[in-house]
Each structure stands twice: as C-alpha cells, then as structure tokens.
Length: 323
Image (cartoon, rainbow, N blue to C red; front, side, top):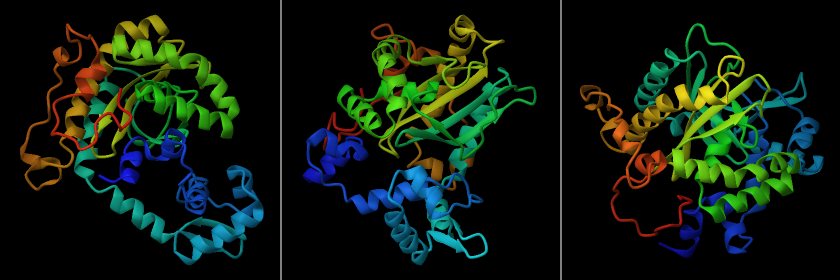
C-alpha cells in the first residue's frame, strides 16, 4: 500500500492533520462543502445562502456552483435563481446506497428496539462534523425526537457524536477536534471537555450517554461499531424524552438493549461484503444478539466485542482510527 493510501486509511479527511502534509486538493474539498449545504433533495439555495453556510467567498461559490451544474451535480432554477441537487448527485448517492437488503435488515433490528422503548432509534454514519441517519425506527407512541433517513445531527451535541469521537484513536479524535475548533469553535467548546470522560466510559461500558446537550428535553445513548465497508465507525443511537428517561434509567434499562442491538448490527455490517449482497441472503436467518459477546471478563467492553472480532490480515494495522 502506498504512502498516500496509508494516510487515507487513517480517517482520510484528517490525513493532512495527522501527517503534517497539506496534500488535500482544496477545490475538491470545497465542492463537497457546497453539496453538503443541501439538506435534502428539495432544498433550494442561492449562492449567497451557500456562501453563508460554507463560509466561502461568494465568488468562489459562484464558480463552484457553475462547475457542479455543468457536471449535473446541481440544477439551476432560473425562476428562483437558486440551485438544487442534480440528477448526477442523486444517481451517485443511489449507487453508493446499494445493498438495500442490508439496510432492511438493519431497520428490522432498529424496529425491534423501538417497539420496546418510546424513542427514535437510528443507524448513523459520519460526515465531517455531523452524522447522517442511514436508517431509523420508532414506535407509534414515540415522543420527542423525530429524525428520519438523511437527517443530519451534530457530533458535538449528540450521544451519537460523542460515541463516535470517543471510539476513534486518540490522535485521530484530537485531530478532528482541532479541525472542529478552527471551523466550528462553539461546537468544539461543547465536545472538548467531555471527550476524555467519554473515552473512559466507552472503554468500561461499551456505550456513551449525552443528556440535554442537543435539547434539554432529550437524552441519548449510543454505541459505536467498526464498519469494514466504510473503514470508520458507525453508530447505533437512541433519543428519548428526558422527562421519561433520566440518566439513571438510561444506564439501567436502555443500555442493555442498545448494546445487544450493537452486537446484532455489528454482525450485519461485518458481513456486508459477503452473503448479505447475494441472492442467497434472504435464505439466511437474522443474526441473534449474544450478550456474552458484549461483556467479556477480560475487558467488559462491547466496543472490543462488537468491533474487534477476528479479521483477515491487513496490510496496514492501527492506521484506520480504531481504538
């Protein structure tokens, strides 16, 4: 594996911070920053709005939106004088989201927990300083938190974000925090004083809680999982009304169910590149969560049990952001 590939394998977006080499092509990075401004397929934004959201000069945004429109990543709406996500971006995201069978299986697992707890249960993946809901489930009587597929949540103020950052290698997590401090200083101020405690708690218990950060009415709990497919951590998380589930009740009643969910989803994503995408997948039973795999005598840590199962030899070890 070449040097560049080795750097990228350790949380690619942070490679320049970790190595001290500024080899990121800024125009590509900024183009993706522009695309991230569009929260959904129906979002319509003008250059001024994009400039405000990205923190980029309007002239730079104008050149980027022109190029992205020529590429089909954006569509220009003359009547509104605004842009929206284009067909090429939709097609690209659709091709990247193949494996709907896997997502359906994950959704079933989320729904099992949602039927037992009156909250929103989600499976989220990281996107710079946010996480995006890939799947979610909630019971009919769920109250308080109503996220949906594609919703973006902040790392600094959510249980999912705190679990994700706590799971990263210390140098990777610190580099992410440093980058956040440069671009989103208020968010970094929220996360920085909690990250060490989150790391310790995750090592000891296999999950992280965040109470009242995103909203004083919402408490959350999250379990990070290593994804071989994405070469990063993904997270299963739940948000519940704080009036019904205080922190003590989260630890007592919610944590065991979420750790079991983490094991079940962990089995699914570990096999994502195998039978889960084949025509034989529907013939195989759903993995059964085994609580003994979460609490091990030698470490009592679901993170170890759920994300460090035996894997084929890797050409680069300890370079992918895993703890």
